[in-house]
Image 1 (tube, rainbow over the protein chains, first blue to last red):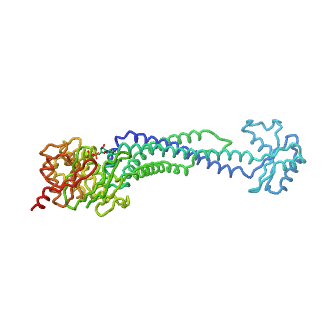
Image 2 (cartoon, rainbow over the protein chains, first blue to last red; image 1 turned 90 degrees about the vertical axis):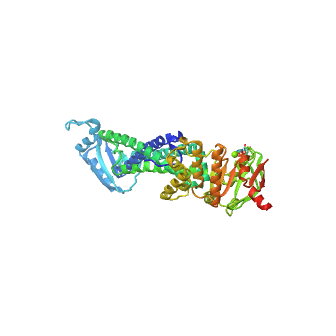
Image 3 (cartoon, rainbow over the protein chains, first blue to last red; image 1 turned 90 degrees about the horizontal axis):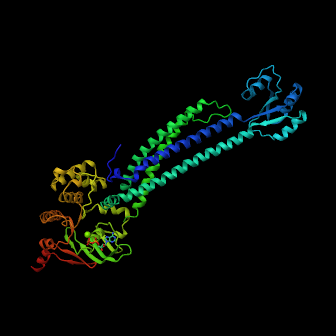
Length: 289
Length: 229
Ligand SMILES: Nc1ncnc2c1ncn2[C@@H]1O[C@H](COP(=O)(O)OP(=O)(O)O)[C@@H](O)[C@H]1O
Ligand SMILES: [Mg+2]
């Protein structure tokens, strides 16, 4: 792709690094955006997958069927709780399997009994109050509200998401500063020809258009380099994370619908490059008579 | 066509290089602009082709008071002025055709029109064999003809030449003067800056003479003869 410029841009030293700046901007920008969208997606999935569940653990020595039944009854009567069900011994063993390995059913290991509690959507509980009430029936019960640690996890993830967007913004600002610098040096290098065009009756927009076209060429070149690099790295990351069995955390990789979103990064980079060059030139030319 | 009223010019905080410049160019006139080196000839030409703003005084060009004309209207006025620069100022990476086409491209003239006109004019100035040559491969005289072709390609109403005979031998200088007279006959108003006294004597056009920052207008020989008879 070439265009015939009045200005001999090919010989510029300062504009040579512009494609690399744009490439870096696109590369880092795509990674930051990928991180932000992947984490954002994970947050949404965590939100829906883990809310509405509480578990109640009963110490093994207290876990007689009668006591469990009373606990279940009390729970079901509590406002905001939709369902409570004591897990069978097998289900409990399955639950601890990831930590303790497959247990022999005959082995008399004192496992605590677990009551799985489903809450009404949006209901909130005072865990301490509930624990106190249940402890009156059976001392030593533990009420586990997943939402406490989940909320903390989501808070961390949100922070990661915002930091990613902040990095994206900083990368953009840095690139704009570099492009302004390159354009200014281009203006200085080509001052004589710019002057000539000006006295011939060229409008500022004509001269700015030349710089803008040049910036577009450099931006597209950089956008392609950066995009290819980003795709390679993201594909590698996706392939690697697919190999890991992430038992605890929902996966934080890009879904097929999120990949196209990344196309906006090189497009935005080219537009930013062009607009920055144009505005820089127009501002400089406004000082001419 | 062009009128200066009490124009003064200084660069930055430097001394006033031009003081109280008053003159008017009638449409279709031809003038020499002379004065010793450093007298301000180039500066005065720059004021005429709107590359500089005067520090004081009024410039009237083609019916516009320049100080009151919005900046956005100045390009249109500049397109009616052709300039032959002292150092030609050709663009080295463009061919002769592309250099001459520049004023038309800048004015958004259609490419097909540009192609036809530019080639015709380059043939007319004797560069038919060098249409696609880059300026650095041309001789000084050839470069000058490209510069002149570029100055006149969009039929300017005012043609300004800064020491066009300074770097060429006498034979070419004469041919150049005849060329300017040809253009003048077609109605183009012309100002030729030169410090070549012999040329002034030979052609006898009216002279704008700069001295010590001030301008005297000396009537031409033809006009004086008319006044005598
Ligand atoms: N851009 C400039 N900045 C400061 N001084 C200048 C500039 N251009 C010309 N001068 C000064 O103005 C004076 C007139 O210069 P110039 O118009 O080039 O004269 P001439 O063309 O008659 O030789 C000289 O003293 C020159 O040094
Ligand atoms: Mg001069």
